[in-house]
Length: 344
Image 1 (cartoon, rainbow, N blue to C red):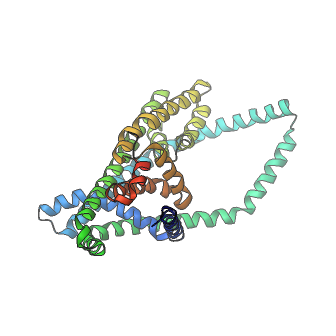
Image 2: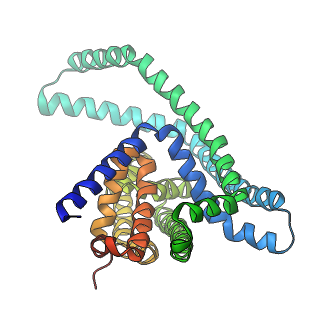
């Protein structure tokens, strides 16, 4: 087949797959997350089965471990939020003072009178109230989607773990006996890639969260754990994620302390951690394990964001790594493997 025809065929396949992923994301996103969870839990599940646990019991035990860890993290976050609520009266008083100072500054600096400011605030409030219904509908939909995913993702994970043998036999039969060994190699490397990616990603979140927490605690932010790990999780959004996570602790540091050095110290903490995360921690912990170059990783992150939103940013990087594994084992795909692979 001529090169131009082969390229056109591959482009058509990519477009069709992207459209299918976009229009079926309601089910394909939780299904993919379920597969991801199943791959992460597979070593523990297999270990329990080798010790003569029934498969259903082993799967239940694995999901119970995830549930206990999740509840523990949720408990820590609830405790931190409760601590933050104790500071609300002080924050309210300080915010009122800051608002008065801002109003005076606008009047002196720009000649915007208090009546003009009140009129603008009323107009803004009216505009927001007119959109309140849309906001409420969006909130209800987001809550329903979250509850749906909390149920369906563990279900998919359990099903993938339970029927993994059947699924692999179907894959072997689809490609035929001739390619069975190659398919087995690709499947094994795919599982290792996904497992290492998630293990590395969790390690990145943990390291960044600890660094954020230590830095904020040194600065004097009482809810250091809450803000530190929220910013850590938001690092999934390249470049701007940790900046978004830093806005709230910067604001609280500004309102809780009279000195400008406190919010500047918070900025410095997140700036240093962001630099370490982007240039040291993530490439060392995750990038090396995936064996995908930085250009391909960034393209995958942004394409994932376009097609699947934030979920795509989580899932598309291992997708690219899996494509790299397949390309390494398929002679026709060697140029793609070269493009995705690390620089030699």
